[in-house]
Length: 421
Image (cartoon, rainbow, N blue to C red; front, side, top):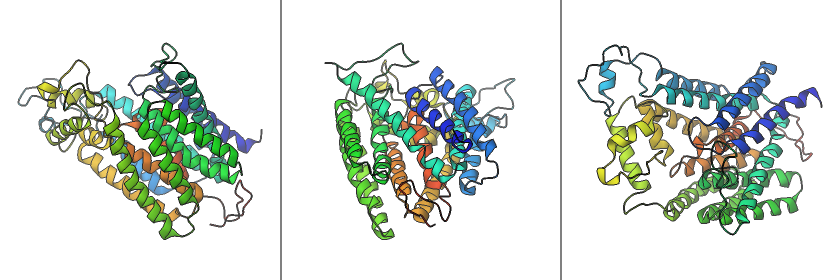
């Protein structure tokens, strides 16, 4: 193996590991800890080997700002006045021995979020440090991880009933290697644009057809009707975007993709088994979370502390034996946990994404990565896919593709075409 290929294999094997072991959505999972340790080692090695290769400074400063936002919640800098803005705490109650205070109401949970975020940032930085051809070479590893999930799903759904695998990982396997069928579906349909670009450039049209048909059939077997619809829509959009040769046409298709995605996730939310009784569902979760946001402006309650804060705002008639572990809206949950700073970071990230898309809209891989990112972000309006490492790592990979500095001016694509920046 060539020395220059070691980095690609280190990150590629790590990516496959994340797609196989990262399907849990709970906290404190042993599998997540294993992934984070492996990523910390492999990504650090790659970054240290390529210290001379710069990454996009906007990505660096955004990641730094987001990391500081988490760290600040852990520092003992808050006061009684700060805590008085956090509505879930009793006011005017002396807290002897607890001065100075932290903004986070649950340090352990926020530390877990910090480790989670640092892991993703290390992986993102490592991919950005690779040469373009090496970064591109991570696609087969990503698709291999998806195929392993498709195969596991096929085995599960080949039984007469849905087979739930227990005692294998630190969570039950309900869809492929995932505990959450929706997150499994998100991984599958967001892999389609990447597969379209990769197999077309490799001139493997038959393989592409088999991949897409298999993905859609397994999504259907998983009971995700909306997932099949989104998968079909994203397949069509992938071909349309790929063969658009002018900027205006591509931007129009991407705007249409956003509207279609919003409509699709709306259908998805409607098709879910939403209620234990009338009125108990995502709209109720959103209403309650909004109450929590208003009651904890401007600081929030600390990242990872949704489960601690949410019950304080639940209506009594909405309390059941099963509890709400997430807002099922990533943006509302971030605002509840991170306050005004989280809102600013969300807006800045959206701005960075739009800026980069406008700058790199001519590259096929960038187009595919943009579609995948958009559909994960839209899915996050009605769910929390990025709280699962098996979706978060592909999201980091897509982001790295989009913000990669690209090939050298005389680079040759894997398809043998000369690319000029």
